[in-house]
Amino acid sequence: MFNEIAKAVVFSVSDIKKHFQTDVAMFAWLKRRILDKRIIKIKRDLYSVVDPTIGTTVADKYMIGSAVTKSSYIAYHSALEFHGIANQVYNILYVAGEERFSPFEFDGIEYSYTHSPLSEGVMRIYKGSELKVTDLERTLIDCLNNLKMSGGIEELLNALDSVSYVDEKRMVNYLEKYNTNVLFRKAGYVFSEYKKELSLSDAFFSFCKEKVDKNRYYFLREEKANSKLDKNWNLIVPNLVDLRKNFIGI
Image 1 (cartoon, helix red, strand yellow):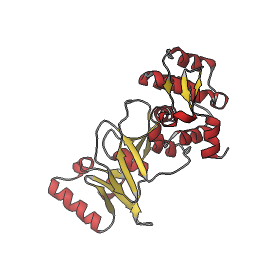
Image 2 (cartoon, helix red, strand yellow):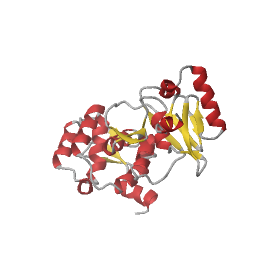
Image 3 (cartoon, one colour):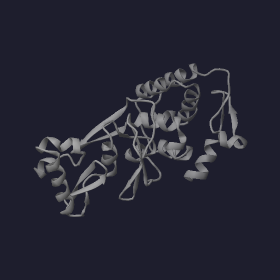
């Protein structure tokens, strides 16, 4: 029975009920497996198999985050980390999904629920349990829309410096799903700096430009003094060159 349950890597009570005739038998089995250190309790109703060679969970933080609720998936800066383009590794994991949960800590990582308005663009990777994370294009659009959750503009710029290609159709799709005027401007402004590196066409920027109205918006409200008007996007923007020098060292 243990080997069959262990295939799931990370599991909840509902996942293993089918293996037991009664709840009493199931919880007794769980208690014994925890005591003999073959299973570890991550939080209430979330467990993982223990790797006997290292004495800790087989699951990594992304697998755990994906299993917190049925709809959970990794997003924002945590997704940048997963895709290998984050400058820093945080001890907090941002988990989105339809079901909210209270934050909890396990093995030095804080798992925190965050709202995300989109439901599509989630990759599903099977590693025993299912790992769910926003794809690269949605991750970039999400982070541009919510710079606080991305680690700031400097962290996003660093990520973009590490990206060699994006799927333009996906980028357009996610921008359309958000459908906010200021995000079209931000996308046009920031991605124009990476047009060649990301293989973005003129059509992408024309699409973004069509959404720009006569109102002016701030890219970063907290940096008004160091900003200037970009007439192409009618957006009051920071100096990206200075940001690179200050935060990336380029």
